[in-house]
Length: 90
Image 1 (cartoon, rainbow, N blue to C red):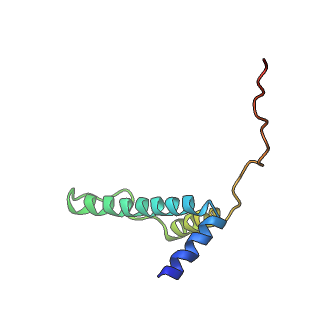
Image 2 (cartoon, rainbow, N blue to C red; image 1 turned 90 degrees about the horizontal axis):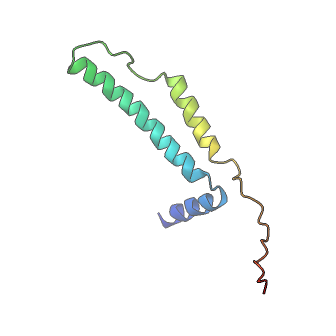
């Protein structure tokens, strides 16, 4: 377990956008579950036909792959330019 945690920490240090990518993936899964819950609620409680039953599989997995790939893009770090210290003019 410690080895896996260390591996992920090194991966996060190398690819800083991976953390944001993970949050996007979790959010996308929440959207899918929300749509499924809406469809179930509409059918069972309201006894109506839901407007959407589920996300199409191709759409769900396409967005998942895109979000995952975004995590491996290099981050846009501004080049560290030395900012001169403010000079005191007496």
